[in-house]
Length: 430
Image (cartoon, rainbow, N blue to C red; front, side):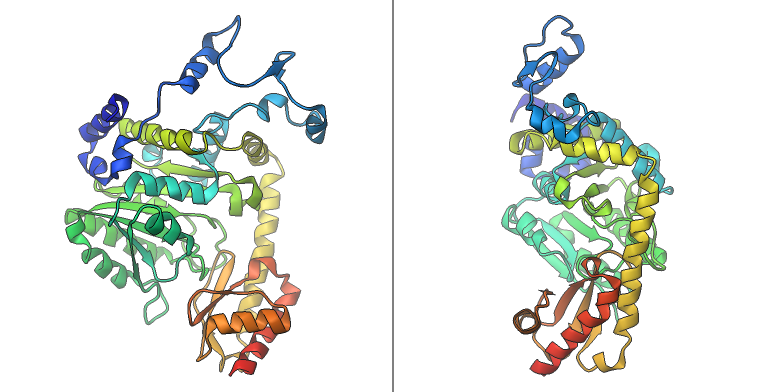
């Protein structure tokens, strides 16, 4: 094992050995090399005469570039903020501003334990990094039975982890805390679990009530007190889109400082929150009382980034940073929230139609981009194909009974027609 990796592991062990045991074998071996990038960083601070370190071309004391590309940005974005490589961990000012956003959006979190966000190539890349750092073959990854299918690729196929599900909803259509507790207890012999929480949930659009969030935190803390190491991976892809009486903070707030055997990892990004899907800018934020552990996890994360994509897009980071600092940001954010909420409200209004009830019920939803129909005696994939072929309506079949509808991409005035067509398709098959 590389001596740099050994040093990082020792630093983790000295402050919290439980975190060391949470690491996968790859996670234990990972480090950030003292190579070209670190030497270039040193040169950037001290080489006042010539800096002949990093592999870019310069011209006229700025990064070499094509004029026709720079003309797309004009004077609004300087070449230095577009063309050079961004650091593997991301632009430092963007990291600072995103952390400030996390603390503002989650006022109850203990700010002393929140690390500096590390920039990723959006959410999926962030999840993949966490999988690499903490999941070995056979590691239990606990998720609700309503989950984003890409988790299978990220954890099961790539890392060989064991994806274990529990029913998301109980008989009262609330979060099934008891099922979560029982599922975690069944994995006690493994010594370590990854619990993946995604709120607002994809595909159902459900976010727990504040009381349910506290119950979830209590279940995880109890498991930790009984000797289980728990990596809580919080997928906050749709954070902030809370339309009704749900918790309004990330569950990261309840778990960041919960127990020494709990490592809370928040994965989020501008992608869906700020409607810039193609920009591919996400973040990983670790929580720990120990600055040494936060540093070690950052170095290991940087090593994974360096060894895969090298760094994330510099232009995307620059544009996101300018957006976050803009005077218009808060105003437009609220405008888009109101628009999304109006579509969710209209969806609930339309779903109250009595004639639909013979074809489906629907799972609770109060947030996010989606909602899910639970079909009555109709195969979801058969209905999906029928709607596509006969009515030109696209939906997503989750399993044999569940059909996901993205109200996020349907104008409010069109939502009733959408569900009428789905009902007509269901009537055809029934």
